[in-house]
Length: 316
Picture 1 (cartoon, one colour):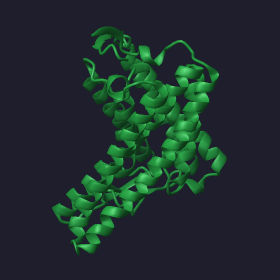
Picture 2 (tube, helix red, strand yellow):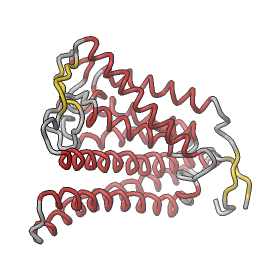
Picture 3 (cartoon, one colour):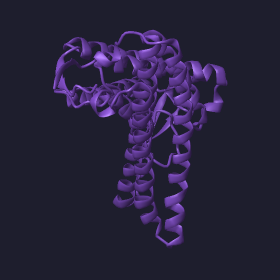
Picture 4 (cartoon, helix red, strand yellow):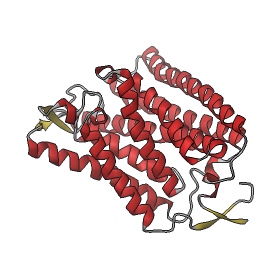
């Protein structure tokens, strides 16, 4: 065993310029591979269950669980494999190392995402810009509510873990070892923003402006990664940011979301602040949420030694 700095793998001496292009090429391959796996798991289990004449409830519980679980495991494995092959790091020993206090970083991230969305919810409702009309699943049986909540949990877990491992864990880490911290943070955030053009509602904002706006959450999550040294903190933020914004507090006032199990709301505020049906990220509300979260990240990581040492295998 070798005594190593918890974040030492994030701040190595700069390597050759060409390594960065290898990391970028690897990310393109990784992104395509994850997309193909997502399509396969999104279609395959459902087709099989239909062929077996499974009920709607079985298709929802089993189909979604197998599909989202398969996507999550595949995304993590592919990202970890690429991290090892191109960057030379083991995911379980670096970006997801279970160092003393890792669970506290995860909990802090969960609380920060909740705090940011909760603060925006209170502000918009007090301003009369978000009107609460009841519960989305009011009158539905408990089994249906639980099923929808489970789908929301799986979907948000997939986004939080999958995107963090891909964009921050592999892409940002690899670029940082090649080109340095600032270049890695900025370059990583651009494809992160562009990837969200595929999400429903993105077309309501001009594509160039949309990418710029969506790079900002990528930068915030990248800073959380740098400040904490692993992905536990940004994964926690990512999970509750999405869960509370869309599926619990419904800040987008989406009446038909298939994973919405929380509030039924109506949006009356100005679009420049509340954003579009995509989310708050396309409005000033997104900037406010980012500011709250980033302040929390700074305070949380500043109150303890983010370079705290822990025992790690000498193979790192």
